[in-house]
Image (cartoon, rainbow, N blue to C red; front, side, top):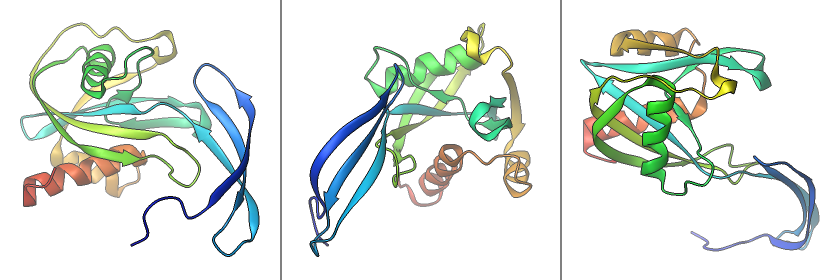
Length: 183
């Protein structure tokens, strides 16, 4: 398997920037000498938490502007000024659900939209949960938090009610850990 970059970056231009992301256009040269461009969205990594108890999971639902509808997912997000994925996970879990976890297990990291974005997702299993008050950001004012049994969660996936790629990938990491000790 080839290691390292096989496509050479000839030039990189930032075409858009805001506090949450940078969009750049890179002129590239492929191994065969042909040239082209890549549009890349650079965003910091985020944390996703699988809050598990009683053979079920705590989920959140909110309106997602880019897809124009409400969606269910595991709690997730990034925290400005926080680079440690585990710390970010604890902040996001408490903020979105009010839950605190006594036990944290890092299940892995997955790339988000790796064909267009540099962003990654750190997946954590959170257990030993205690309840507290959620402290959502203003942009999360419509968020709903609900516990769902595992069978119900899998039914939601089959019915297309959970379509968030990070949540689906996180659940696969959990299943691999449970079935094969991987994670």
